Every structure is written in structure tokens, then in C-alpha cells.
Length: 373
Image (cartoon, rainbow, N blue to C red):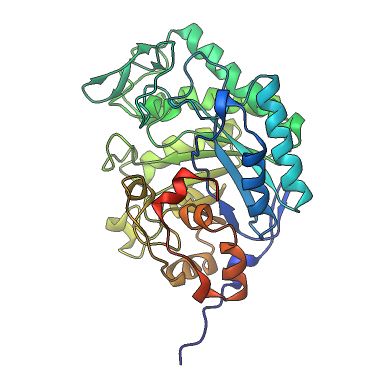
């Protein structure tokens, strides 16, 4: 008889500046579109509260958008600005804290991306060069004044998060959205100081957002930056082709004020540079930690078959074992692990893993995306 998997490595405490977590499991940020007029209501607060009372170590909110004319691409995405929206988020964090949880909002701007429903904001969408992807024009190129105002809006939203009592802030710089569109040469064709031939040059916008946010938050408040090599516009994109390129990208961002990199992969077990350390080599989060010394979060198809993008296409996923995850956590390759669909569909997922009640783990039904379970 096979011995049950020892998951103790997932349930060690974690400390980062003012943040103390009871375990290493993070609820990944997942867009839900349940905030009419940008305001999260009681149903959203209850959704997060259920995860907090079921042992999730850290909750990262769905993407919440900054105060720009066209910062979201779906009508139900919540704002992180304005009196009504901030009051809604105050209810969310108070409920999470009442249940013994920790939480940070993910601060976002969707750039030139399009939503899935055909909804579009009234103002023209903005991006580095008016491009959503190669050969895909959409919206307008940002002026330097637009850029300055956007940087200020990220910092303002982050400061509001601290005032409301959130435990940290995450900036969304991944998946082909605005910050990521500055990183990506295919969508950043600028000739001013926010463009450039190198990834390090194109990271200036992100570095200035980080620096402004750090100034707004002060030195002891944790700041996470979410990044990805892949883009929703092209899964095969790889911004940093080598560890040296990755260091040129990430080290200046850490120096600007990032405490932790949230390194998004579609499958967490895939090595980032297998030509260097083999098919069992470090993943994106592992390399980011090695190159920068910063704490990192890994993510990507944890506990379920398939991936999140397949779920949006209607694909059901089945529970899978956590052996590969535990092996990497025991090696301290990265510090935290974010879990998406498994926790989205089952608020009790962490508790079941902790108690070893794996027979009760649920398959993921894409119908879960249409409700707040």
C-alpha cells in the first residue's frame, strides 16, 4: 500500500516584511466578472470569506482596475478606485480578516486586450503602441502624459489598498495586459524612453510603476509583481530567452521595490531553461528566485489536469497528485504556490489537502466560472 503524500512543506509558515502566512498556499487571482458598475458586493465578499475560513494561506483578489478611462475589458471587472468600489473592497478584507485570512488586491490595467463577451469601454483602449498583438491594432498609443497618469493611478490604488487594511498589493504585469505589453517587443514599438531594443529598456514603465507604488506604500509593506513569459495573444512567446536576459529584466524591478515575483506558467512543472539544467530543471519562479534573491510564487495547473485557458474553452479537469509540487517545495525552489481552478471550484480544497482527504477532491466543472461557488 502506498503511503500518503507528506504535504508538510505546503503548510510551513512564511514571513515577508509585515506579512505572516500560516501556510504556503495562495489563492490565485482569477477574473470573475461579478461586480456590476465596478463595485464588489456581498456575494463577492462571501466568496473570498469562504476561502479564508478554509485555510487558504493568502488570497489574491481577481484583477481590479485603476482609475483610467479604459482600464478594463469586461463590464463586471471591479474597480479599485471610487468611493463605492473601495467600500465594497473594505467589506471584502474585513470579512477575510474576521475569518483569520490574509489578502491582497491585484491591481490591473487590461491595456489593448479584448474581453470574451464583446463588451468594450466607451473610451479608446490604450497601450504602448496601439497594438494588442503582432498585426493586431486596437486603440491608441499612450502619450507620455498618459503614461505618467497611469503610473500615478497604480500608486494611488495601491495606497488605497493599504488604507483599507489589505495585507499586501500585487501589480499585474503578466498575460499580455498593459504592463506586459510594454515588456513585449511585438506590442511595444515606441521610440521614446519607454521603448527600446532590449527587455531591460522596455521594462522602464513597470519599474517606474513599482518605484511610485513603493513610495506610496512605504518600505515595510509587501509588494508583489506578477509576470509571465507567455501571452494570451501567443502562448509560445518567451520574453527572456536566457538567464542573463531574465536577470536584466527582473533585477531592476526588484531594485525598484518588488519584494516577491509571482511567476505565471501554464504548467508549474515545466523547466524554464531545460537546455541548462535539464527536463527537471528550475521553473520560472525557481530561476527568478535564483537570479534576484527575491521571494517567488509559482503557479500553473496545480492539482488539476489541463490549464485555465482550456477551462475558459469549456474543458473539464480532473484531480491530479501533488508529488511534483511537494518535491519542488521541499527543495525550496520557490516560496509559495498559487492554486487557481481547484480553489475556484472548491473552497475546501486546502483543508482537504491538509487532512489528506484526497478522495473528496473534486473535478473542475467549467460551469463554476458562471457562479461564485
